[in-house]
Image 1 (cartoon, rainbow, N blue to C red):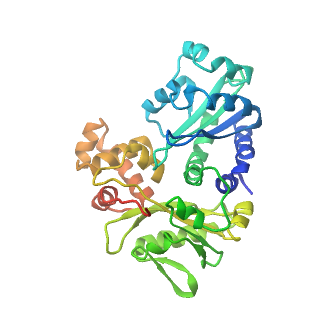
Image 2 (cartoon, rainbow, N blue to C red; image 1 turned 120 degrees about the vertical axis):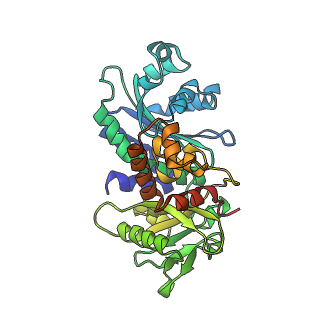
Image 3 (cartoon, helix red, strand yellow; image 1 turned 90 degrees about the vertical axis):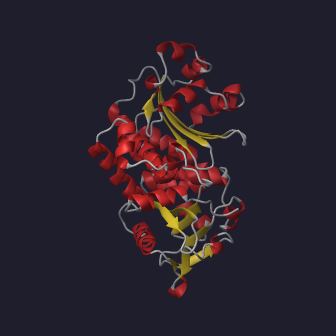
Length: 359
């Protein structure tokens, strides 16, 4: 199983996070790695490589877990990717800031991390570190981490909903957390689904022989391609795309996640989990951070999408962001590709008319 497969398996088997972080750290020559979920409504949630356990326990008990000046500075950069810490800290801050002496003791002089805002408001951080005796992270290392970032983001989305707890042998557990979900077998047959999934009759429909289908032709095409990709020998095609109601205006995002090994055993040996996430805009436009988390948009793409959903023309949005029209059209093309839309009006309708699925 390759590293990407293991990332998705880990989303359902939280005991594997430490080993997966260790593998990613080794890929980029890091000595340690950490995955944290910060939400003021929740206690500290995290997974780390073995050499950071004691440090993270102490850090989670400190005041800085929820009020972290370094994280605040990184958030202001609004950057959708991994960053070396020098982009948002000075030499003096790295020597004197809250936990830095403790960080040096465990050999974390150089750090590369990425911040991902989840649709529910949780802040996810992936961070990898090197000791002072090694060189700082090179651009090639950052590029490797950026290649993994969309997969880490999707795994983190599920981890935040599952609260890093072991998934039960039924998708009924996900219903408690407001996630409509179904497990799909290799032949496309629905093995199990929760009660929330049964409320999606205006967007999904049963097909012959117990298979799953979508009313919308474009959604059906994307769903078939995503499910087919899971069964291919090459790395699976994991997809997230918009799901719109047939007779209502509610909309959400459908995620097709492969299930392998331990995760597959937990979910009755299913091949893929089909889960629905939504966001409640209440007539407003979702934030840039939410758009990035749902559709893997870059900061520039999310900003442009927000402007368009707010009623600006493409020309006005480009002028407001001081970019050329050619650049704006390139961003729009990428937004269409990532959201599964084809026209600007369709994109705006999706973003402005969104309502959360489930309670």
